[in-house]
Image (cartoon, rainbow over all chains, first blue to last red; front, side, top):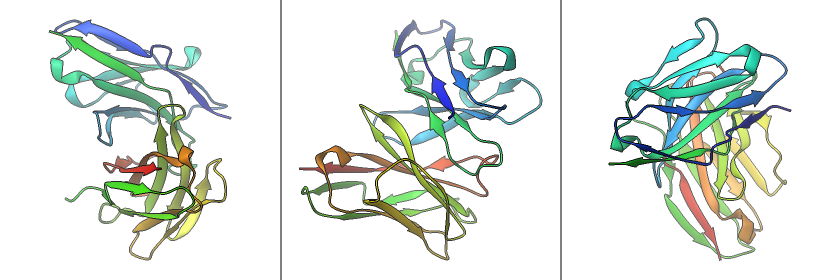
Amino acid sequence: AQSVTQPDIHITVSEGASLELRCNYSYGATPYLFWYVQSPGQGLQLLLKYFSGDTLVQGIKGFEAEFKRSQSSFNLRKPSVHWSDAAEYFCAVAPTGGGNKLTFGTGTQLKVEL
Amino acid sequence: KAGVTQTPRYLIKTRGQQVTLSCSPISGHRSVSWYQQTPGQGLQFLFEYFSETQRNKGNFPGRFSGRQFSNSRSEMNVSTLELGDSALYLCASSYWGGDTEAFFGQGTRLTVV
């Protein structure tokens, strides 16, 4: 069965500092990969996705992620964090050709210090 | 265009009752998926409907059921509510599923007392 691991439950960074959120997945082949963000009491917003091709993908709000097949990782990065980035971030996988069935990691809560 | 709409936003039910939640997908989207979010279990997939047929199913008991109508609107039903069913229920729609982006609604917060 597929699974997603986000090893960092909480991360605190200073505004303007760089950010990297880790994500490792377990899947028999290369799945579809996603990063979502959730603000308190809200639904999920897609930041970026990887289906195939270039392993460095750009998303919204200045985020990017790099797919590394050899490490089964899909880490999310941002060069300079803004206070409004404080939220919970979820990494997710979906089987290729398997419909919209996302398996989520446990999430990383990001706190931004001013 | 209008996003995914979930109604109601908040619900309080008594243990043993049943509840129906509604999800209106983005116009033109044919896939609707449901997820349960709790502090203890995180985000878990319930089921997915595509063109009125259940295409995928998660590991939830039979008390959880759903359906999709010809206009792609979807409902999920939970019968014989338990305290552990208290959660945020999220609906996501996409045009096809899988390799198309899923858009989430704001969710329905269900509290079982």
